[in-house]
Image (cartoon, rainbow, N blue to C red; front, top):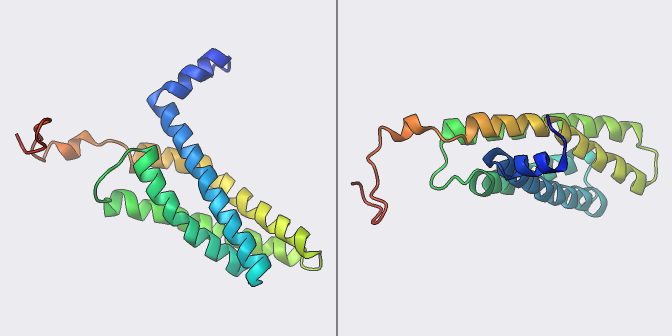
Length: 167
């Protein structure tokens, strides 16, 4: 891989590079949402680390799906259950399980610490658990879930570009 600035800029401008940058932006938004919810549930509501993590991951996955699908991959219309919805939520559930187990483990080992330290440890663990899956999810989203499948469109009538009606 060429790491010169010019080569990196060219790669970022490629279709895959643009998608990767949008996916990264969605990830940042999702992490911010999850971290706010996690901190709120753990520090304000005073739920357990496990319950707080489950809440944060569950809620933040919803905007993540829609932002990734519509903005990063430019998909419109109804979601395809088996090609988009099921794989996305399976990966979200994997992240949910991994992060919940990790958060529970860390909380058990920092349980006697000050609340602020516990909160930082739990939030860092949540981010780390999802970081492990981050690159794998991009490859799965880009190559399997949201990839343009021309063979699917061959069975559908062509649309007239001017009127949007089958031509």
